[in-house]
Length: 327
Image 1 (cartoon, rainbow, N blue to C red):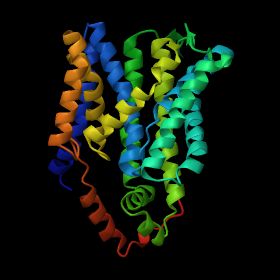
Image 2: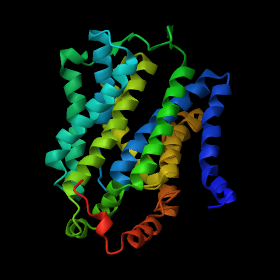
Image 3: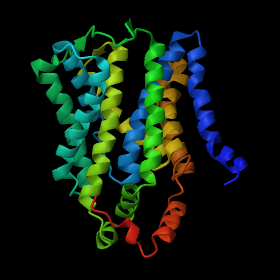
């Protein structure tokens, strides 16, 4: 690969990075606040993109993992003296463990049945944290202690925005590597033909569990930063509407597309803010725009070149023996 080809390959990533850093130079707190919301939402779309885009699993309760990460963080901040930098990965791991526990019995289901079960899981999680006293019931937690870095408390929105952007960058890198790994190849076969994948030696349930668990981890990590940025948490932040918006963002951007997940997340959060001056009409216009985009670009705004990747994979694997995996 020539230097020019390499530069062209990484140009989109450079453009995304420059656009992501732009809000830090704004003196408008509202702009930076919206940028933080977009960045955290993009972390969620990256996680759900692994579940829907890579493994082909429709999850309508993804906000549950967001909530698990948020409440794990809040509980540890209130009842322990652990540093946030240790709590942060714990929140992601906790969400991933719940993903595996819930996924083990439910991922044997397909299509509409899986969607209904995941929707129920999301609502059960929200109702549970609303009614348990240990989670603060409907009030939740507030005035949570902020993270401390090198002896300084992180109180500004800029700090949390940088944290969110770092998660977005790490999520893109991990997603990129996963897509080209043996596990990513297994997901591709399972998504398009589960019976064929099984015939080639792929364990469909294990592959789905990996996707569901890894996707849940990113939801938990985003929930941890969300809690600290808001200094509070309550069940109203994790409704079905939140799960639905993440699904819309992934489908709108392009299932399986890395940059599509980012663009979908930016549109899902940013477009209603652009229409905010229109007050009560803004959600109607947002819905019209989304429907129009779906009609004009049913494969997504930035569709993933699945056929191209699949053909390259098949050529490399010959008869498909490289796709055989127990994962």
